[in-house]
Image 1 (cartoon, rainbow, N blue to C red):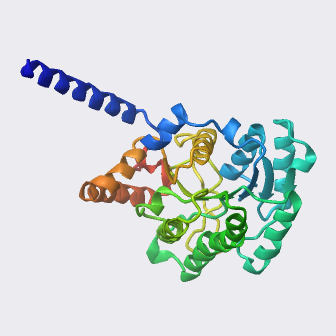
Image 2: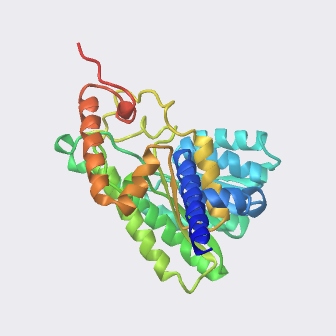
Image 3: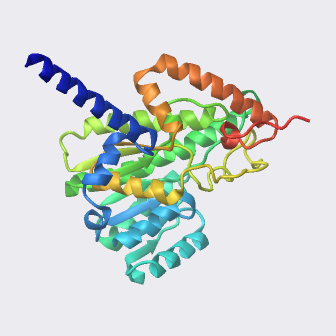
Length: 336
């Protein structure tokens, strides 16, 4: 009898582990986020009517956030530097949703101009009366080797990605503590958890964001209805490569390369909205094999270092050969 129970238990555990392994092979997010997408609150229900302020809303992930939030019925504040692009995004949001013109506020914002952030926040609050969700999506990436990169590039990355984000968050946070509810969601990156070649400054700025908001979350325990969440996407189809810093401040990226192998922007944003709707504090969003790196760095760092060094060397070699850095994992350098 005892032998039968043990055998049945072993079979159950084996099937359970096999099921999770199969799920992991095809997963594109961490298990907490995937369970929330299957069994949790739907963004269409939780986000309807909420006032959501999106920075970096003129392209890429920010633009897709605006589109999907509009379809969810959220009222929007769209911010970035390019007002004409924000107006284009607004028109698209109105076309794809039931929102009215007054439900979307275009608010040009320069994250580098920190002296303007108090005024911009007051304007955002005054327009709708309150802010329910701030999504910190503004920022730039990097494609250059450390030995060739000017310190001015590192300063620009920290000023924009870290200090600009912290500044606008500090303006919004007192408003949320006063109203007792709210969400501050910050788009970090997989390189905010683990370093990657060609992104020393970008990775440093994202590590800084991770440390800041992880620490802030622990300070907000007296405000249980305020969510502090970070999003760590892997490679996603967006404009981030085209807009990346190189070794010099004003030098553009030579070629962005093919982006088709990356996660579709729409899928990444859908998972983000699921996480926000269900109060997920940290979201890992990436297709395989990148998702494996998140777990490796969390649970098997020695193995993660081995894999990172191996792929990192290949990434640098392909970059020097003139290939797109992100597609370096999927292509072989051409030899003449």
